[in-house]
Length: 351
Ligand code: OGA
Ligand code: MN
Image 1 (tube, rainbow, N blue to C red):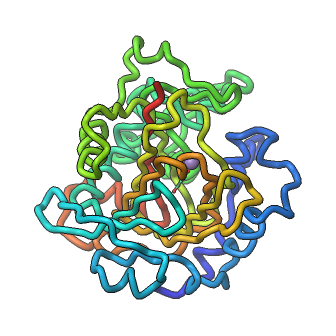
Image 2: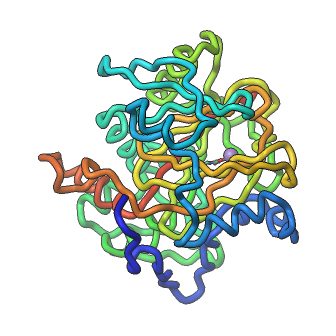
């Protein structure tokens, strides 16, 4: 792991006059008041405080390693190997569970580098397009083709501010700093309304179909892990984390179907993922190091457990550096945007 650099941990946010800051904790924005209640005394809050600091005891965290069985099991005696995962390139990776956490499944490096590059590209180029919603929609009307083509072409783009209806021409450089880096989430498939905490079931008729590539990847993943072939990926959230972003502890409970597994993949920077129990008071709250390419599943009892991301770590895989390989210009553009970023894509069956 590379040491934390002051530049990345003390990122300051440049605010444009009249623009509302994006909260560092974007679940607080999503969850309304619930996440702001004084919950400081719960076990989950204490773990969040402990792991949010740069000197957090990472050695105490569960570390599933980067794909060789011996790294993971030497890190913690709670880690149990429960199977083998065959990647799409034919190579094998261990499948783990954690003793005492029923239904939680972890596959380090389940995605090949190509799959990580693919989903990173989709997350910047395709998934943010209409009719999918993003946090930026509260402030701006963005063009249907999204922002990425404008950045790539080095051309400016017109946006309309929702607050006062004024239009503004933004230069290509500013699209990156003012808009793309402020993108915190995009919703896929059945669109989720953060205020009412409900899914909108009309949108599928309007063409907000779940992305077919993510649909088939998730479906085969769930099938490989023994959940059968009737899993339907229907809704998803793409989270884009900048270095100081956090995601407060929560349970995803808006899905009508709480028995289908919640499938989550990570790309880019590593992070600390906290996993507690059914209540914020339940102990222990486990800290887990999640890396680019890892797959995690919350199923069974763990589907109802509190979880969150108190900290993004500096570690970033070498193959995601723009200069690492000869890439086409679109991929180089994506990798430039990925530099300080962690992407988490999580997929749910809702009905
Ligand atoms: C979520 C979530 C976890 C992560 O978006 O509901 O729990 O690893 N994300 O970012
Ligand atoms: Mn969640």
